[in-house]
Image (cartoon, rainbow, N blue to C red; front, side):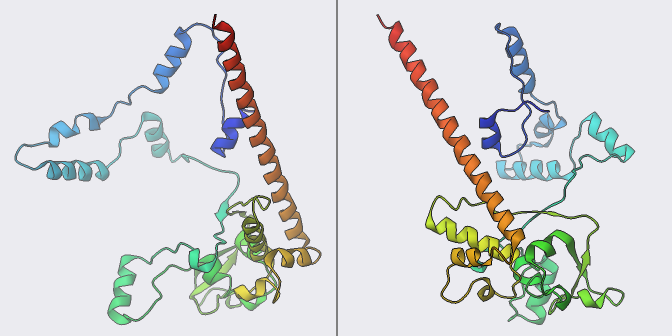
Length: 286
């Protein structure tokens, strides 16, 4: 098991592997600090001298340097060996997919490739279909009828989209879009923006909105809550019918509470350390 520090783990929001240096002298810490911050040798060190010429402006020289730099990339001996032998440079035990659950007017969209946009401008300049298909806004609401009772969480976890063709399964064709869904062999783990519902009424409603959007089957936004009911009221009503959502919701609340407790413990520890340091300084004053 890796050594870890709760404060660094909370701040980094990712795995950390640290080692405490108990050596009291200065030589070892100095060596380690010098080693991890040493300048990496690179052929680019001399590239500027090779490219620079007084006949060009500084901007032209900088542009030449940039273009030369992006043409290739210098790699170390280990990476070069791995690439030549066909070894994977990285791997992971879990596949992750981010679900953008924000309100439709706040979702960030990806534009289609330039060539496709040029064709749209040339053939149908009034068209608004300038964005890539979005899983939450486009794919899931137009999912095939056989997945009518499947939640967004299930579809994102188990399905990929592929371009539709005559050889694909027609039952899994996406409505109104030229795609077909294909079931994965292994489950993808879904991530999304995590909110603490205890911090404000707005976060409580938004967190409930996210949970309903993930686990309640829907075709449009109006399906997410009953008329006259808030998202929080709707999630309370739906807990018995959607046990997976209830368990997921309770787990998120538990994690948020644990993070709050950890942050409070870190804050108190910092205050005690600061108070102790001030007390020691006061004792030294004659």
